[in-house]
Amino acid sequence: MLRLDAVPTTVVADNASLDQTADSVFRRSSVESQRSPSGRLTAALAGLARTRARVGLAVLLALVAAALPFVPGVSNHLRELVAAGQPAPEIIVVRAISPSAPTAVPAAPQPASRAAIGSAPEFNLESQRVPAPPSLPEQPLIDLHFANQPQGWLIKPPFVTWSNGAYRLAADVSSRFVAVQAPVQPVRENVTISATFRKIGGPPGGGYGIIVRHQNGEPLEGSFQGGRYYVLEAADRGEVGVWRRDDDHWVDLLSWTHSDAVQTGGASNQLGVQTIGNTLVFRINGIEVTRQTDAALPSGGGVGIFVGGDGNEVAVDRFSLGPDS
Image (cartoon, rainbow, N blue to C red; front, side, top):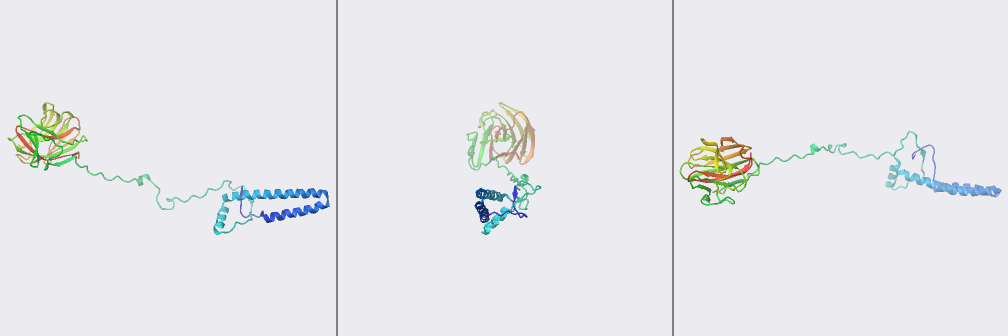
């Protein structure tokens, strides 16, 4: 491999000097050819040598020109000359490469990375991770005030009606209750239900409450007396109770028990039930009155409202259903 730079020994190659050298050899050969027969042979050989010399020098120059772009320093110098509009010189200086010099063409320097020049820090997946936005509180599946006739809720006189801005349930038949399922059922196992009740008719006694864990089967449509679910009730006499309906009979979890949290008579009471696995948390007017655990019914299931007692009439002013909080 050849390197092109300044050295003590030079080779000068251009068209003019090549012609001059060949002419000089030819003239000497012509003179010698006139002196003897052997001179003529010498002149012929000189002409052949002239042609071979020119071809050889042309090949050498072509090889050198092809190697110039890969020689450090020379290619940059040629680019500077071309950019300045100056022709490249015809004199090319050649010397042998030093034995200790590397034989591979040096790789072109790579531009410094952005991190190296301080424009931006090195990319890091953790540092670039976009934080998740804070989760918003989930809205209730139902939050209904019954000021207007509700859409989707059961209307089935005489058991279930709507009038005067209230949803009304009436247990007119002796020893029969009224159970109504909500039109939207929860998709989660654990939920929170709230409803506001007030007694509007019938003799003292009887109760009203919230249904949870209703298992699939016959719909709760007012007159149906079966089903499998829990009901958590308050009574106008200031009592609370929890039962499990098992098709055709009741199972006591908490029989009627007095609670100061209940407003008696026709006053409004806000009932709240929270389901947590097999545990049922019962609140009256924001006060926890009991917490019952029972594994007889699986988690999940439907929700609704309930009225029981002979001739008991109750108005429901509000009903809400949301996820467990």
